[in-house]
Image (tube, rainbow, N blue to C red; front, side, top):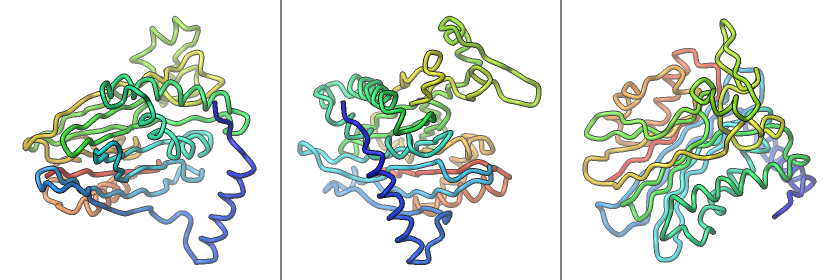
Length: 295
């Protein structure tokens, strides 16, 4: 399995920061952007927008995203993800650079996408654990979305970042929030425990507030990297999908998010509106949002 060249990663990150400082760019400024698919069919066109803002939790930004289109094997693929790191940003950076390649390089992807996604999540976690000296002790949650030819949507997640689809104006959560209390039996069977202290959220071994994540070597005997996976055929009833980290979902309910986005046709403006609303509601965490509009 591939190894990580930590010196090269450090040099690359340092060079990027120097370039940004020379250009007088604020490293904590929001990341924002948008794009469209290259499909020839108007019914299969997909537009997307994203907006990420650093939180006020006393640590550097640990959220990273993917939002892009690729052509592979004669198909147009939309690749979208949010990775919410903890104890540093090395694991989410690795996921941003590698997870989708690992999925698409699975021999089974075109015939059995669900199997390919599951295998790629597992193998990617193994690579992260084997390279923990370079990547550090931290980890990351993930929510990923693959749009195939504007017709099929494959959603996968581990952790508490979430995907919500708007179908005829109604919010439908496509992902599972992997909270420790809901997986207490599995965790205890594997030798771990879940704390539920007053004024705090449930935590695995008193530390991590999610039951599934990439990385986290010290907790791995009690954590899972098995994703929940959903397939959604894209038809005229499917209007848009929202991907967001828990910094948004802690303060905004699913239907509230859908209602905010409904009337905003520009997905970048919609993503920014959602993050702004989360800040207005006093969310202190990093907030990352991608809005994907169909048709």
